[in-house]
Length: 130
Image (cartoon, rainbow, N blue to C red; front, side, top):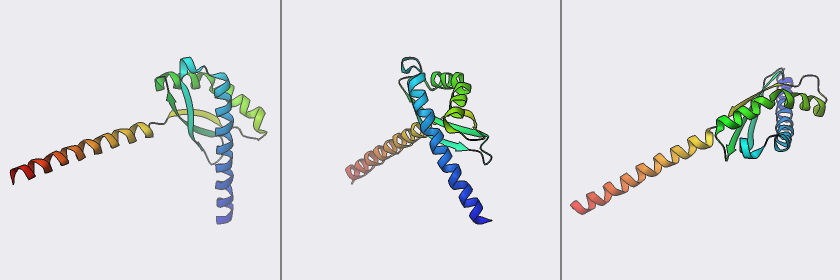
C-alpha cells in the first residue's frame, strides 16, 4: 500500500511539473506583458485525482490583480491547450493564485533589519552612558 502512495505522489509531482512548464510556455506566447506584467509560475499543486490544479504565480511590472485577471480570462483556453498537449485522461481545472511568499519574505527581512538597527542604536547609547 505504501509503495502505491509513493508511486502516485511521484506521478503527481511529475505531472505538476509538466503542467507548470507547459502553462509557462503558453502564458509567454499568449498574455501581453505590457498589460499583465511578466508572469512567473512558482508552483503547481495537483489534487490527488488530478481534477484540480492550484497554479501559483508572481508578477513583475504590473499589479497582481491585473495578472490574476489576465490568467483567469485565459484559464479555459489554457486548459484546452493542455488537453491537446498532454494526452492524458484528466486535465485539471486551473485555479491561479498570487504567490506572495517573496513579498512576505521581504517584509520579514525589513522588520529584522529595523530591529537590528534599533538594537545597534541601543547598544551605542548604552556604551555612551558608561
